Image (tube, rainbow, N blue to C red; front, side, top):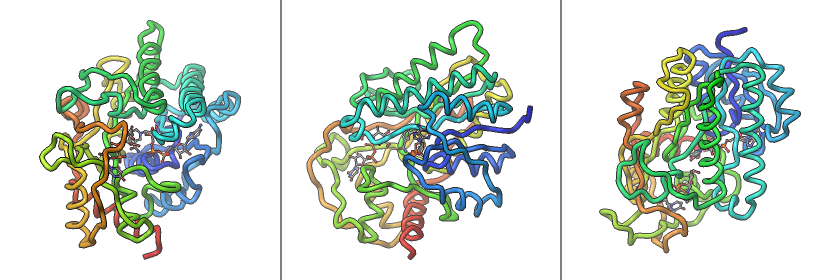
Length: 343
Ligand code: NAD
Ligand code: UD1
């Protein structure tokens, strides 16, 4: 058995590709399994440009149980799995709930079965701060109440966490799991060789903003200015994707070294700082010198007013904290957008 091979499902995607780079930096040997449903094979070139390494890649749909079984038996010497593979568009999940449940839940179950079969004991799950819904108290700790999901996508994260909690609770489980609840990842690797590749019209703030600044979109809509926040726009905890990627390496290593306190642990991954939509726009303008054409429109249905993380548990238990500030996030998102458009 190799002692550093890590399977990264969804490793061609936005967070996955940045995590591959940090895994290589930390001396791990990652293998990507991805069906390219929301990514492009060219990502491998970007990763190679940064790490000078050709990463093994398996094009497989993990919601197909036979295909999943086959690819895991090929890589059964892995010591851990980071499971990013999922569909993630909230609005689309409302339109296509069955597709979302099938993709996200089947994939997770198939992967867990493969882990059990091959005694791959260390598992990291991509969860989301969406599980907290509209929090009654801020910042949110890992013990803050979980609210009913407002979309099939959000529900796949909640159900995913519940399945893991129950599966890890059985006495003969040898698998150790950490669920990481991401707040709002933005930005890109400083090399501009990898970044976010949104297909079609972006739903998320940063890609919409950078596409507006570069002229692909005419105007950014700021969804609501009547929230009960200092400037009236909604507040989120934006985290640099490289900080997030580094946290995966720390969490995985904790499991591999058996430093975990229980077989199922949950951590918030955020900066602990909330920023409003207008503050993000100001940061972008400050860090890039570009102007953003925006207008205030009505609230977006389903949006929460404010959410940001209490980071105490991650800091104390993982010994991890973010290093990059909002200006670095917005500047790197812009550098990536320009690179994508050949500027
Ligand atoms: P992404 O879409 O860029 O990456 C996901 C990758 O998984 C893609 O490359 C896609 O092709 C692949 N994939 C999807 N279904 C698959 C399947 N059945 N088999 C194999 N590969 C499959 O998304 P991301 O932003 O990198 O998100 C990664 C994970 O983090 C997801 O689970 C997402 O739900 C979660 N998450 C993301 C955010 C965010 O803001 N980006 C926030 C919270 C949680
Ligand atoms: C959304 C999802 C969340 C998911 C996350 C990552 C919803 C309700 N939530 O989080 O479940 O985990 O994406 O995919 O969709 N905004 C604008 N104009 C825009 C886009 C966004 O003003 O064009 C505002 C939003 O109202 C919000 C903030 O920017 O206040 C961040 O939005 P977004 O990037 O879409 O992330 P979330 O809504 O926090």
